[in-house]
Image 1 (cartoon, one colour):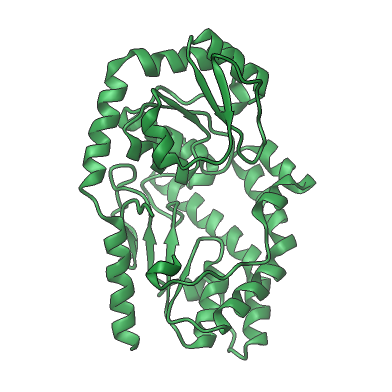
Image 2 (cartoon, rainbow, N blue to C red):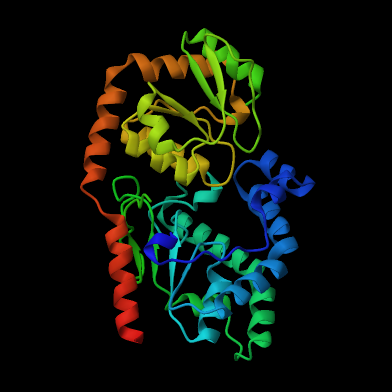
Length: 337
């Protein structure tokens, strides 16, 4: 990043530590749906004041433009306004309400066009309540007039970092919302039993949960390894279906077996199956060695999954999500310069 003239500003909240806390573990157990949303809000209230201060301090150090995530967007807009600089949202999930699908955090089932839209506005309003106290406090601290989260969002441009092959841009979205395309810069014993049942050799990436297995001819535990290097060298990828891992799997041309656990993971898992690059998802709560082994063998033995995965990879190669972000940044910089 620094080689490209970009600087990094650390924020005071450690998401890994938050998920390892008692509240974070309850969130992980909640999976997806309304219960998970409520637990996420409760967890967020704990660290929102510290996050607010961190964003304001980072923006005050000097910047030409603030690029925010869905988590930092509401507070980042306040900091950017106070600093007199523009901001653009970069989101990995389609969070804006739409008739076309239900909110990503509520699961995969459509509620009908009217139900989808109503649920989307309900989730958005609930999330706004999480940020509202911190936004009010930060606006007071920075000497800005009152302005609600929803009102500030109306004019805020957002680019989404996923392919329209995966989620076509909803026709009822506001023009300020665009889909840019991807930009690239279980219990352990049960999992190992599934690998043996499926007759495969296993690379187990330990991740934040620190999974580990005794190394053998059929299993090897590894630490942090770039997905763009690792995934193309595998026959199939079993993953949790987070937005970033899903993108890396699609880019690799490798069949996948998604094991969604919480929040937006069921949404992405369903999209992978709809694209034809994976068998049906195996939800974490329903995970058994036999079920995972069956899905893994299906992904490996049915050549249609690999063929479709490689076709999707070729289609993604024609997209340039990073260029759309760069164009938006240059347009904003020219307007405000």
